[in-house]
Amino acid sequence: MTALAASEGRDVRPTEISVGALALVLDREGVAYAPDHRALLVADLHLEKGSSRARRGFLLPPYDTRETLERLARVVAAYDPARVIALGDSFHDVGGPDRLGDEERAALAALQAGRDWLWLTGNHDETLPAAVGGAVAETCDLDGTTLRHEPGAGAPPEIAGHLHPVAKVRLRGRAVRARCFATDGARLVMPAFGAYAGGLNVCDAAFAPLFAGGFTAHVAGRDRLYAVDSRVLCGD
Image (tube, rainbow, N blue to C red; front, side, top):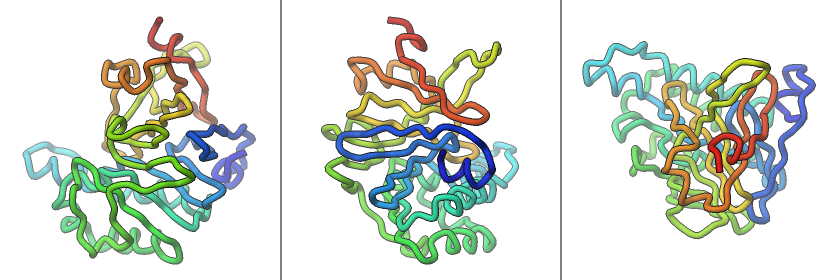
């Protein structure tokens, strides 16, 4: 059982995988936990996307950052990681940190308190100011597996985000479109965590160069992740 499921009293099976030599537990909330490192991995928070879109004339409720941080706080409380690694596009644009409200700044600081926090840069947030707290890097390494924002930017094994994978499957007699992890054991592409992040069908051609031999999609259901072979999802 994952830590989050246990904290909510849900009897679900953990989804345990390895990427290269790195052992991971995948959580249906869209995070991965590396127990040997007490490290929580999360991708594509896209904080302040609502305010970014509003500046361009799109009428979106400006509450996405608050919702995303509240969800992340529940996950952090459940796993109590020693380290959090955000895999890029944590802010929707380079001006995002400056648009954070006081409550959101306080919420982020509370999440970072007492643990190491690493921001990996992405294509939306190539630079991050010191005011966001934590450390900043382009990549990092866990047990020989490289963590970065864009998949395929280096040799596997790697864990990345960027593509926001979602899958369309039939669960319990109905069609469902849900966020998913995509992995073949050498690469893992994580789902976007942000409330307004959106998603790209995991059968899209953008994924094909990453998984030439096929992959497994771990699709978020109501209570757990469902493992679905890419040949079932996308055809041969």
